[in-house]
Structure formats: C-alpha cells, structure tokens
Image 1: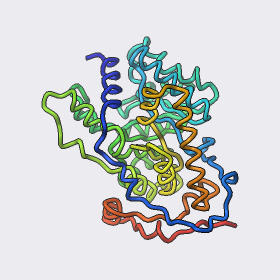
Image 2 (image 1 turned 90 degrees about the horizontal axis):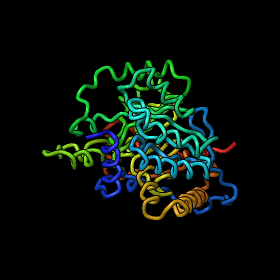
Image 3 (image 1 turned 90 degrees about the vertical axis):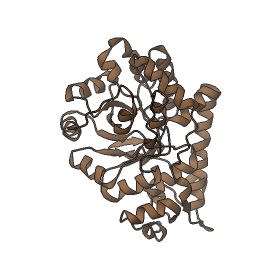
Length: 354
C-alpha cells in the first residue's frame, strides 16, 4: 500500500470512528467561586509556549499531509482557520515529503495560507538531523514536533519494529536544529519517566498526546487480518498525562492534546498546568461536516466559552487559571496518587495576586 493511500485511510478511519476512549477530563471539577470579582472583558487568553507568544491557548495539532490533493485541501483549510485566529498549526509527519518531492506541496500550503503565523514541522523519532532540518526549512517552521508513535507502529501491518536509539536521535536533532523541539506522543500519553528523559535530551516542549483522542491502535487494527486488540485501551489518559508531565517538567512548557473537544476540556487542561491545548480530530470533523466558515464559528464559540469559564473562576489570565483550585476524582485521582502525585495540592491552591 502506498504512503498516500495509507494517509487517506487514516483520515477516513479517524472521521468514522467513535472512540470509546476518554481523556478523563470528566474526573476534573472546578471549585466554584461565588465572588469571582472579574469582568469577561478583563480576561486575557494570551499565552506562550517557551519563547513563542500566541493569542489564545489553543493550537491546531498535527493531522495530515503527504496524501496528494486530498490532504493538501485539508491542510489549506486548517491553515485558513489558524490564520483567522492567529494560532499555531502543526502539520502531519513530513516523511512523505522527504521521500517524494511531489508530496511537498501538501505541506507547503500551510505556510502559504498562514504566512505570518506559527507553524510546527513534524518528523518521527527515526529521523536524522538532516531530515529534521529539511522539514523545518520546507515550512519556514517556528518549531518542530518529533512524534512518538511506538504503539501505532507495532499495530501497523507495515510499521517499524525497531525503536532503539530514538532518544539519541532526538538529542541530536535538539542540539542542531535552529527552532524549538517539541516531543509529541500520538495518543498514548506521557509518563514522568519519559518526560524526564526527553528534557534531559534537550527537548524544549512536551506535548502529552494522551489517551482519549484518535485511537491509532484501533485505526491500524482495521487494516490487520489479526487485530492487536490488547493495544486498544493502552496508554495514559490526557488528564493524567498532563499532571504527570507538569510534575517533573519544571520550566519546560507542557501542551495538552488527546481528545480535546471543547472549551471545558481546554480550560481543565490549562488548569492542570498545560500552557496550551491542541485540537485535531474535532476540527477535522467540523470541517468535514460543516465546512470552513462554520468551523471558524465553532472555534470562536469555544474561545468565548473559555472566557466565560475563566470569569466564573476569577482567573483573568492563563497564569491565574493555572492557580485555581480543582478537584481530581475517580480513576485519575487513583492513578496520580499511586504515581506519587498528591492531588490534594490542586484542591488547596488559590490565585496569588500582587
């Protein structure tokens, strides 16, 4: 099967799947503030990812590219959405562009329609320094994601079976490329141990890519004669992954992704400690079902709803949202406490103002 055909299969399966996974954001509840002492107009959604400043804590996460005209159209529409909101956009894996010059336009279209915005290049952990630099140059990218997709590769019939040396390659890329390196899981989450290893290797941003969004194990199983069913509920949920990553990331920004579908998910992700939240599958479904203009309206509504929630919490900024008290319950509470993360600290904090 060609790489382009596989890309389109991934998109079709992602759109048609109703993932049984949950990001576990339902385990997160805010402590209501009856006297928030704040006006909606005073709420700022400005945030930053390291040295990159953005107007709202949302970005369009990696989806596609390398599938010919079909993925070029999707990336053009995604770039148009990103350009309207002045938010970052990541492309899908650029390995197709490395191996086939004809596929490069399906990625380059992003910079053409998002000319002054933040764009993230994307390679796998198998990439060389030269390949990573090529991907950055192709898009004039502001950062590069290195995606980690071991489970997807294991389930993929034609996938990789060798993963040794990945951390060393990531370290080499981080020490040579001229833009920040983002380590991104593709849907199975990040543990404290992995985050520590990646930071020690020079990674400047962590995208947790938690369980709860597009299930690439399920997608690849649709293409197998003998499915690997045991991987379909594998991984660390998005909520737990954010808390795990933040607990050890120190000054390194953490990005939330994996089943982020609405303003509530975004707000809870930021409150758990993420700097920004990435949406992928939800935006793709909006585009398919409702078209470009309605997708822009949907996203505008999510940002408006986020401002309303921050007002109710008395949080005028992303920094203050990360200080509001919240309760962690259920499986996420159990998971985090077993992992040595004291959930009570989230419940007893308060916004600090000068």
